[in-house]
Image (cartoon, rainbow, N blue to C red):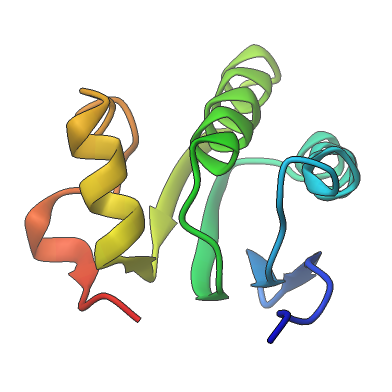
Length: 110
């Protein structure tokens, strides 16, 4: 069973990420997100509630997005983080670096 192709789009001021990726398809999603981040201003929430992947390449992409947002003066935070992705971030000691990855913000694993 494969997930739908990942997509990033702006919806009501949030960067909504849906579908799933792997190491071979993450670059396209990263590029989509970077274009949207550079076009945004102010605070931007990345909604991961419809995102189906928990993998180290996802954490790398989110850190890249966060770095780009910081460089362009945008405050980036995350919501809808799955339990699996939050656990991976915690194991990698990255949960404190990604706003919204705290235990109170995490959804049960799916």
